[in-house]
Image 1 (tube, one colour):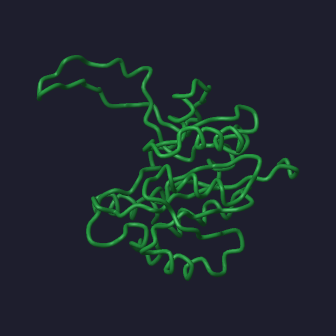
Image 2 (cartoon, rainbow, N blue to C red):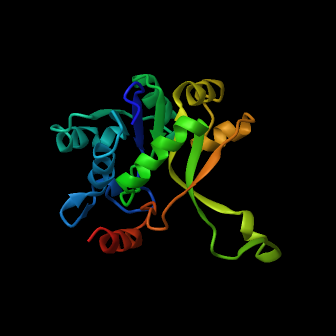
Length: 219
């Protein structure tokens, strides 16, 4: 590990869990532990120096209580969009490299986080992703138009990792828009973004059904 470089993680957690139900999915407990705690603990065990959780205002007090004894963790207020939450995190603390990871992906492994850190020092910009295994159809008005060649297709996950100044500049330039992933911002600006093979277990919890899957993986 290069101890001269500071590595931050930003965990946007500002969503309203509208597709999940009447409770914030990040506070849902799996085997007695909150979803967000699984996520953050994987980063706490990694080579990350500081973890900035950008939280929905409705759960910020609960998160501060959950992580009150966590030395690496800082809880701040998120934004109205994911992009705004990440930007808040970027402005909160300077570093050399930053990893950005969805709070609702609790199956992330510390090993994959550390691989991401190693790779970003060389590539400057990357996203964890998995090869698409399903056949993909393009559909218009309920009718299949074509079958897309899946050999070149990947499903984007997180963490995504960047040279700090590179991603900060992208957020400054594209502020106020509604990008759903940070790699996409650099793609729009013509920057190279690389792929690190991820895990099919690293799903994002969106619905109650995803909780049942997570219970199996986290048992």
